Length: 126
Image 1: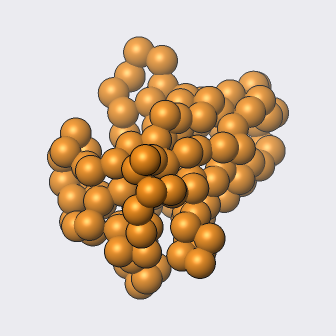
Image 2: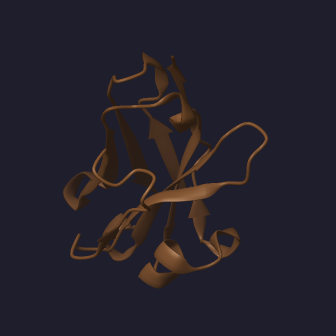
Image 3: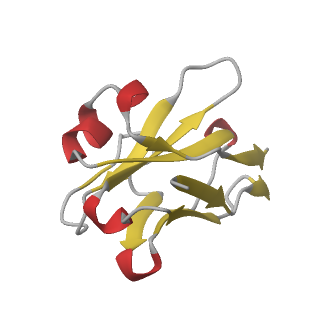
């Protein structure tokens, strides 16, 4: 079964840190670019980080740059999102998604990405 499973979400105070994991099974994650996305209540889903197959291309929007770090361990079929200096506006459901095309993950229409996880909730209290 092809799937992505996110973990690591939870409740944290503003200024705190969390590390999310996205583990793949049923397919070779090493040939897929991966992105992290989030959806806050009442808002559209937005991308917060993406990484190419070998980690050579990484992108963050300005809203999280300097606070979020995406990384991957292809041997473990896992992509991580380290989040520090969290703010209440970082609250939302965080999803990972994978696609063979890095530009689809980093700049394309996310609705067409090949594999999505079920999401993990991050709540940042003020």
